[in-house]
Each structure stands twice: as C-alpha cells, then as structure tokens.
Length: 451
Image 1: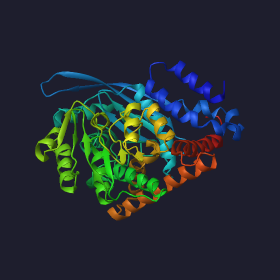
Image 2 (image 1 turned 30 degrees about the vertical axis):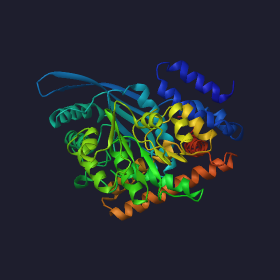
Image 3 (image 1 turned 120 degrees about the vertical axis):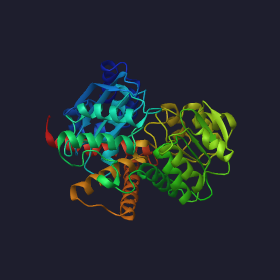
C-alpha cells in the first residue's frame, strides 16, 4: 500500500468507532497523494502519520445543577491537535451529538483551515454533549462554569484559545470567560467571540457567514459570475446562516431557505433584510423555532426535514447552495438534485456538510465547490484578528475588520486556486485547500525535528 493508504488504514484500526474522524482524514489524505513523491523528506520524517494523531485529547466530567435542584452530568472534551504554526485554536460545540470522534474530526479540519488564514494559529476543538436548547440562563451559566472549572487547566492566551461553535454563542462565551477570569485572576484573550465590552471584535459574529459569501463570490468571479439575481439556498438558522443571508442580500442575491432541528422554511419571495433581522431576534434573543417565521411571513414550512431534502423532494431550483448547519447534511441524492436543477456553486459555511458521495458529484459535474476548511475560514480568521486586538489592547473599527476579513478570504481563495493549478488540478478547491494548508504545517513540523 501507499504511504497515504497506510495512514488511513491505521487510523481506522486505531480508532474504529469514530466515523466522522475517518471521513475527515480520508478526505484530506487522499488529496495529498501528489505530495508524497515531491517531498520524500516528509515521508522519512513520518509527517503524514504524525499529523493525524492529536498532541493530546482531554475528556472530563461536567457536573451541574438544574433549576429544580437535580444534579446532571455531561462529558466535556478538548482535543489539542497541532500547534506547529501557533497556539491551538478552535471552537467549543455544545450539542447532544458531541463525542470524541466528532471533536477529533473538527480539530483535524481546523489544522488546515487555520493554516490557510495566513495567521499564526494551530488546530484544536472542544465541546460537550450538553444541549443548551430549552435551558434557562441560570442552567446554562452553571453548566458553563462547571465546564470551565476543568477546561481552564488546559487553555491560555499563548497556549490554546477556544471560541464558539454550534450551541456556543455570546451568552455561553460570556459565562465561560467570566468564570475563567475569576479563577485565574487575569484578563487575557483566552477566548474569542467575546462581547465588545470585554475584549471582543466587531464583525466576529458575522465573520463566518460573511467570509463564506466572500469566498463564493471569488469562485463565481473565476467564471465571470456574481450573486446578482441568483437564487440562493442556505441551511441552518444560527450565527453562520443569519449573516450569510445578510451578506448575500448585500451582494444582490435572494435567499429562499433556512432550517433548524425542527423544520425547514421556504420563502420564494426571499428572506430580505427585514425578515433577516426578525430571524436574528427570533434565534438570538427569543431563542425560538424557525416555524415561527413561517407563521409570521406565510412561508411554506416542512417540519422534520432539512433544507436539502426539501429542495430535492419539491424540485426547487437554486443557483447557489450555502450549507451552514452541520456535518453531512447534503448526501449524494441531494447533491444530484442540486446539480440537475441548475446549481452552479456550493460553498460550505458549516464544517464537512457534504458527504463524500456529494463531493464527488459536485466535482464530477464541474460545479464550483468550496470546502468548509477554505470557505468558512472567515470565522476563525476574525477570531485571530480578535486575538491580535487583545494583544495590542486595541479595538479596530467595523470597516477595518471587515476589510481585513475580505482580504484574507481573497488570499485563501487565491492560495487554493493556485495550489490546485500547480498540482494539475485546476479548479479543484478541495485539493488546493488541503495541499496548501498541509504544506505550511508540514514545513513547520520539519523545522522542529521529532517533537
């Protein structure tokens, strides 16, 4: 077997019950095959095998008390995957589906995503199987404080800087940062996604959605196209989806869909700025369900279905797809339906939202396809900008941060595009992103020797 196949086989043998991690490793490693002959020194130093093994992985108990006085127990995780180019950096996810395999897949992806941003950040990820939905502020606070009572031992401004992810927004970051500050007696940039009042950055909440849209615009431009007049499907209804809608509107597109864990809404008239603001209040303040949007704006509601199933079953035509919910939400059937109905571009706002079968269909049909590690890197890039502002004790203007984000996303696109072309895979953003990110980390690992 080849070096690459050996690494993939060993991962599956060593971690047999982590399918999401296997999927992420295969997706990256299979595109790295062209680098093996070109860089024999990486093979000799066993870089390929070393990079799929986390530097350390922590699992811990998180006991907390609900409003009725009942003691609850959840699991907490932090996987510090690779810090070759900077401190470990990656979000915290609070969702019932969280387990070690999912955190490892996210942390592994984060290595290459962070490398693409041009900022000095390594890859890590963490979270818990705690579900903040339906919990009171007091319950969420008590959980976050218990979670931080263990996590604080493993993080630091120059060591590991977590951020938010699914289920972790401004409320949760505030509770965790407040407790960290209390028990460590220091005010440092150890978490990103903080409120503006205590060290946050303008544009950080918007950054992933804005960045995904910027990346999609760059891909479209390679074919002389843009968002103007295009019908766009967006999945999810959280932070990423909300600001993707906002930026698509600014660029002249029309978003017709959103979804959460209960339902999908289709609004053929388009989710304009007024409706988008309603979604922001519904989700971020009222913490309501997307079905309430359907009641207010007379949109069509499909309960228990995700956006891509609805689009396939209803034969809805969209020009651009921006999946922004969770992993593996677009399967092969959904991908085939999107292509059949005229979709020309897919850019991933979520992490690994397309299955391998879906990715193959997009690539075989020459659809513009931007993988999450490149397309949604704007979130962690702006987290890096927040870290810079914390270190400098400065706060940049909204315009300055947004301009830096745009420059970073353009740079990521160019790096992916140029790298793919250099390896004979012009237009293949998966290969371009993986090789570009891997090359930067591999060179740093080589410089350190065997550590």
